[in-house]
Figure 1: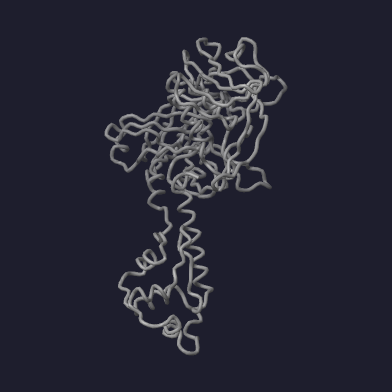
Figure 2: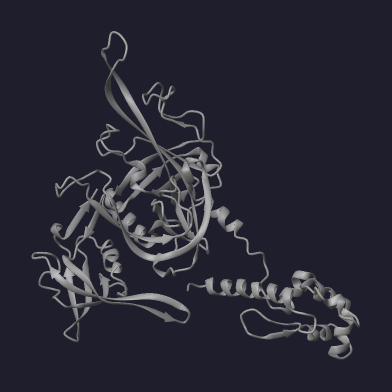
Length: 492
């Protein structure tokens, strides 16, 4: 478990044990365990340390009287008062900290959550399409009109220059996109994108004043605090998009902050998380839960409705996600998933809406998202992913419990190799992949199959990828130079 998490969890547990012990223990058994170090603290010893003179039985008698009734409902406050009567001068909180050795600061994350909330924005997008419709009344002619629709979601500020009023915001591609049935935009991306920090007035309108689905007035935000954003780039098949805000006076004078990036690869099942986003399009809201699954794949219909197999069915697109039981609502798309340390560990993008399924929300792991964003920015707004040209297969997979940490460990073996691909003539059938490094950099040990695909997102043309494999029980190193355009696949 990452630094700080285990300690805090132990303190919470010890506080719960302490509360239960104090509620149930009679005065004749006033011994509790101190937090985190197994040291036993005896209340009589506390009294002696603070000046009481006498035997333990005499001290007990001083607490509950001869018949014992006064001690029937003894609480921690009673012990504190007893200690004060014997010379202790500190406050109640100091008493707990000094003598029970507990970190008793209120387990309240409101300050941290407040900071996180200010790194998340609501996102509203408008779409326009020129069309014609048949009048229902004389002269029954066709009339030209502009059909308008809108979508709402969330975004997370990853880079911020408050002095200039500039920001880069990550969101989901599907928040900004509509098919050609609803927009004249060539790439399907909204031309009217507005973002709203927490507390900002939302005045976005499609301009459909009478509710008939057609434009009556200008689309935009003339009455609120909407900040105009522009699309920088993205990848539909990874559901990632980047927005840019420039010269915003509102940002300059606001309390917004950029999110602190965490490490989704080190997440553990059961860790506490917070989802923050524009729930149901009604403004920024916070929900909490736990990590249910640290990495899995879900399949959803392609946004653009493609049918490359020509089987009459929309193709499925697979996304690697982490799963949480924190409530993920409509409008949370593109929002943030933070861990208990206030670090961004995911971008929420989906939920399971089956009637018999509860508490299954999904987020794109932030480590992968970082790789995607860097790739998109380096390649002029599109994603160019390096391909090995092999079909990896799990040769083994098991859970390993070590030092209180539960991890899945996989062994990845090479199977099919595509002729002419980057790995052709380099890797061989049956190779067990052990590690990967790029341009002589840090050697990344491969313990999960997804790590290979994620790391390939960081490869650029001209890079050298060094792969350590076990081949026929012998450790071997192969090098692949990505010097051909054919070694990359572009995603728009």
